[in-house]
Length: 220
Image 1 (spheres, rainbow, N blue to C red):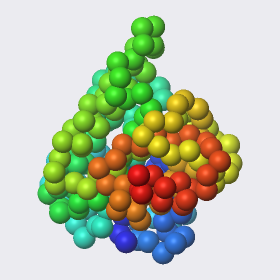
Image 2 (cartoon, one colour):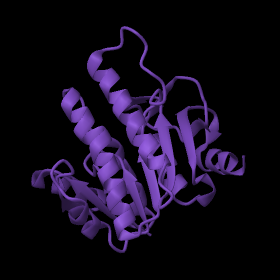
Image 3 (cartoon, rainbow, N blue to C red):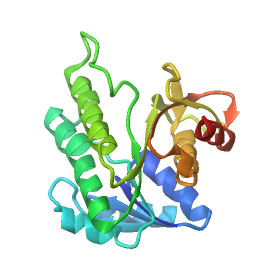
């Protein structure tokens, strides 16, 4: 497959690029800064410089032409304020979905966040609350599109611990942590499993091997 990843320099995206390239897929990662290109090349991915906060649908659609799947893994990141949660975590996700539809790329996988469907509890940090609301709005937008074969993945608290390959994947898992390595492995497996289309899934560490967990949820 040819797979285009928005947010190609993110920590999950770089891991996913290595996995996909390693199994023989053609991978392109959309990045904002040219100096990030070397890291993508090292991961086996083609770097594509395109700022999702200023690009048009047509700009992005050109990069998606001929792709078999698109993955939205972009985010404003730590240290960003409320405005960028709106412009990246919500706005860029919708823009990327528009571009996928324009380019005829139906398979669309989103890296979201656990808790994005509910109003943040009282006392939640205002920037984090804005992030969750932005993610929830972006997910709702994607789920309303009949032109996309979407899957939304909502990992728990992300860690840089080595992946174990053992996860819990379900519509509701409860809250826990998950290594970024294992998130990337699940994303790669979801891209291969059309029976997960139209599903919003939560992901935490567990006791089931990744491929088995994806097959099980696909069969539900």
